[in-house]
Image 1 (tube, rainbow, N blue to C red):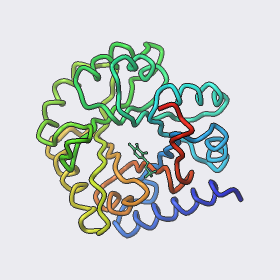
Image 2 (image 1 turned 90 degrees about the vertical axis):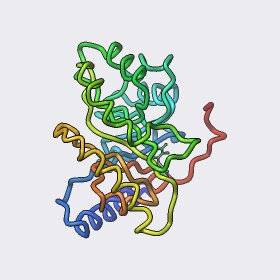
Image 3 (image 1 turned 120 degrees about the vertical axis):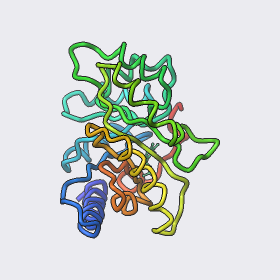
Length: 231
Ligand SMILES: *Cc1c(COP(=O)(O)O)cnc(C)c1O
């Protein structure tokens, strides 16, 4: 068995155990395999082990891989920072975007989503730990998005994404995820069904607090070697 396949098996076991421990239905958490900096051949290995959702951070790198992988029914998630001059490519080549944090970006994605594709699934990124260096809106701004998103028919607002400050203690990991879950629930928008939260080190805490998608890179594909990429 390849190590990617083995790693996927262990991540599925962790997700399953967390779902059970949290009293949530089996299969309520989707795994997005974060494949930035990894070659197309690694994605094929994951695909052959049953993985369908893939997350990428860099537009150019993702488009090159997609061109090599167009024979596979992969579902593509854009999870990196978004520059306005890249929105057309993102709106065309992805099924999901998790990292929307400016109205202008949402408006451009809406205008540029091709008519022959279904509406683009969107998560608004929230800077849940209020770190000055991180992307994302502040939690109090979330309610402003309700009326804006209603004017963008080519987008389907699904929920939120967050990357909290790293913490090792389980209870401390849970707090920001809980704050986010409560803030979204308070909006009372039943179509917001997606909580993209949890990575290799905190997926259990995220699942306890309602994550519906976890984004896992290192624990599936191994350490990343950034010197091998242009970005
Ligand atoms: C890289 C990345 C991940 C995956 O992180 P790992 O620690 O490798 O699991 C998840 N989400 C985002 C937004 C990322 O950029």
